[in-house]
Image (tube, rainbow, N blue to C red; front, side):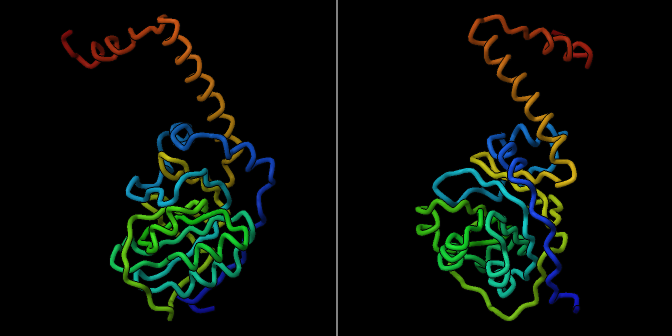
Length: 223
């Protein structure tokens, strides 16, 4: 197996119950529950009309001007997987367009996260398949390689391993390490309950904001 042209085995798919528990959780709360980490750069944003992205990652690394391995990834991805593409963050050449996303949707693929550019934005934006990307370019790619599938990649400052869980909503994308998922879900549920309690106190006009002044005084701020 040659470095630069590698397709590694895919890990086992997660239990559906795990995905069902993860799907309704907000990306912001998930990131907070991981100590404000594992949130992909906000430069990688939603290009579709709406809808939550949730599924295990099939990772792809390609050069900024080539999408041969992206095409292969669409062929080998299993239903429910998210194709996560490290394309160097370049906006010079698109690596995914309307044909690729339409074919992926027909195979039950959950969506795309691309650290690079897409094209056919009107078509993708009108569709329901979740697609996150750094931007757009009308220029198309080569189809020659190199490229690798199921290797560790860097997406918007976050390392993604094959099988890690990807959650995307209107705020952006968060990567949940597969081995930590159950604990992250429990912490996120607890955080969501605390936030709900705060919102209730706001509605009742009983919210205690004394912590703000206490923190400032502890920092030496004169009030």
